[in-house]
Image (cartoon, rainbow, N blue to C red; front, side, top):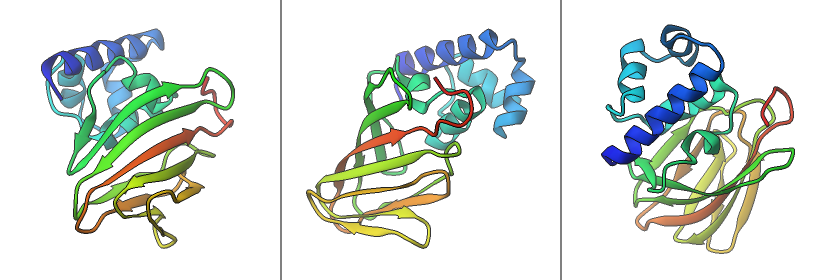
Length: 176
């Protein structure tokens, strides 16, 4: 992530934390990350993983897209890039993303908030995705929807995979 994007993410993260009246220690403990890492992130430093950003969004009780909305470049790590395309304004909250997975990538994703579902439509390449132990193989044009409130994965083979992903957040909890 470039310096401007890191700074933007850090400022946004800090404002969301302060709106809730939370300390650095409180958010770091709840998200399972080191206080020093959260401090660096809020200062626009560090290199947060997608899982770290997800954990922070879950603890702040905001959709992942709300946390990354100010960032205009794709976020990525370990062969996976994602970019927010749009966010719905209704209930349930729906976020739409463009996603690319490099060849020979396995991305293990942590469980999202209770009731969250993902829908994936493969644009190009080959992808195996879904809950661990119940994955589905996708070819271009195929779509799957699965419960994302459990660990799940994305796996490519020799070619990269490009897909559209929508995340529909569960109505339980206080997500907008």
